[in-house]
Image (tube, rainbow, N blue to C red; front, side, top):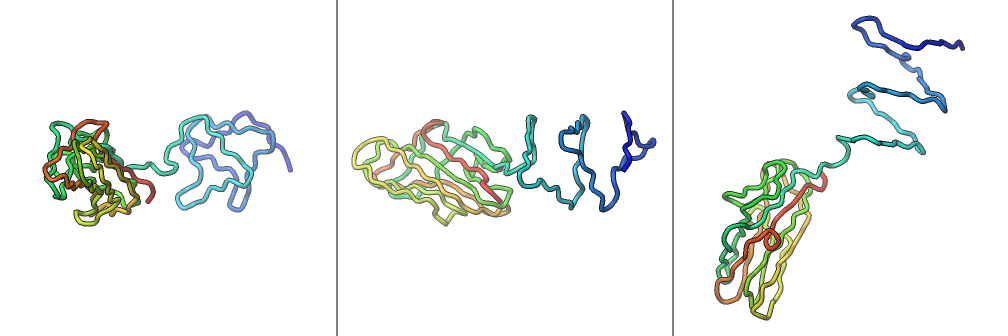
Length: 209
């Protein structure tokens, strides 16, 4: 086997430089370093790039396109006036202000619902502050207006402000499914759900497809 000593390899003008032929292996010997200063494409569409066991990929730069992006994602909270919830009536809660809405999937103006554009499993959560509650509180995440998820029930037993919280993981179809937050209370009269970023909020994000 001969050795070729050169300082630079250039393809002919307007062509590409190819190393090796079909079935060949191009190896960089142990102790040698390959410095690729320009843009590099590894493999081609439909091909597999294999990193053998025991090897390490060390990244000191920025990695993009790896793993889940966890979007669509949103977080909204109640702003403006407190919402009055009638006695013993299942009532949808309005969250009018978004902290973020990555894909524009949350409706903060009309329906106060999250309708993702991507099929997958979503982590959905909420918190509701209930003012001057004295009896049972039933809060829940509801899918497609009818299926209750993460139903949270508790009894306050005193005329106090209280918090209702819940979360779930649910599969949502990106073309049709949506989730909302509802509250039912049995105080005997209307009860208020106060506003505030720390008091009353609703959010969610994609976990996996």
